[in-house]
Image 1 (cartoon, rainbow, N blue to C red):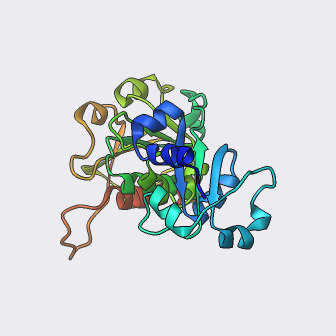
Image 2: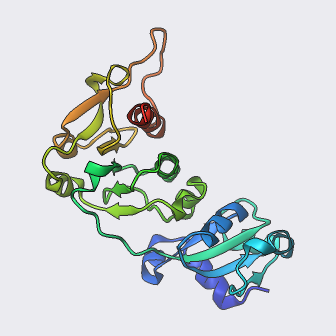
Amino acid sequence: MVSKALSKYVQSLHQKKYRQRHGAFLVEGGKSVLELLSSDLEAEHVLVTAEFAAQNRAQLPERLALVIATEYELTQLGTLATNNTALAVARLPLEKTLSPTLPQSGLLLALDEVRDPGNLGTLLRLADWYGLPGVVLSPGCADPYSPKTVSATMGAFARVQLWERDLTVWLPTLAPGTGIFGADLEGDNVHRLTLRPSGVLVMGSESHGLTPAVEACLTRRLHIPRGASGGAESLNVAISAAILLDNFFRNQ
């Protein structure tokens, strides 16, 4: 049985104001919980079904005081349609220093008002796939620690470093010569360029693109050419980011 106090606490973390107040967030599903437990993040509570505990005993640290719960309890406490494996409460990580010279040694992804949790989660997953040093989020982005975003990262939440910055203030502070790239229909054909993974790739929301003040900070604009017989009006922001990132890493 899950105590009433723990139930109330877990359910409160569905809302951002309580995640911020308690400094904690939800991780749902067996795969994501195991990713959490193998990371440097701190797990505060771990609730599992008896079957999941038996199947994954070797991956569950002995120091953890597991709470055995039913599938019904996990589903009621979380946000997934069904959950027959695990749910955890993790502590929000402390933000590390963001050096202005970091983009010179690797490619950072910066997101300008990407408000959809699913898109944000997929973008964090891309950052994890390409091994980016981290992702910078504007204040208008979706909460990276909302349950929907965390689920969409497919475990990347446990590995990708995040910073929240006003991009119009942060981008101008970067070291001189730092490349600041962004997608633009009038930009250079990305397929004809030789890019290296350093600088900052800025992606905006699917519906509005980059905000004007952030767009003004770009040093180079990149265009993804549409196929000769293509008819789509636009690309999803995560798909666009994937294409652009692949071009940065193509020659590595």
